[in-house]
Amino acid sequence: MAEATATQTPVVEEVKNCPTCKKPLKKARRYYRNGTYYCNSNCFKKAQASAKAAKAEASEPAEGAKG
Ligand SMILES: [Zn+2]
Image (cartoon, rainbow, N blue to C red):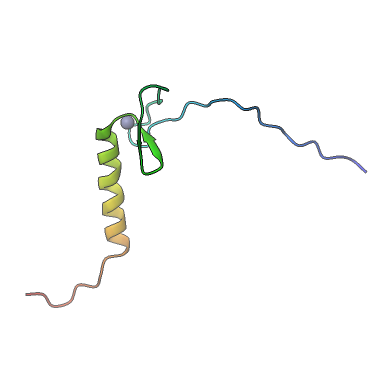
């Protein structure tokens, strides 16, 4: 039987990018919030704002007659 050769991924510290501005995150310069690294608090706030808006849109309570 042929043995499947598993591709071993070398343990390399990959450079992650900021989810907001897509800039590469330097080891020393990064802003960790809610399990994600950003390049600074500004990008974190941006991401939060967009995430919040998306969430609100997805699970918005049916607005009936108000007032
Ligand atoms: Zn950024």
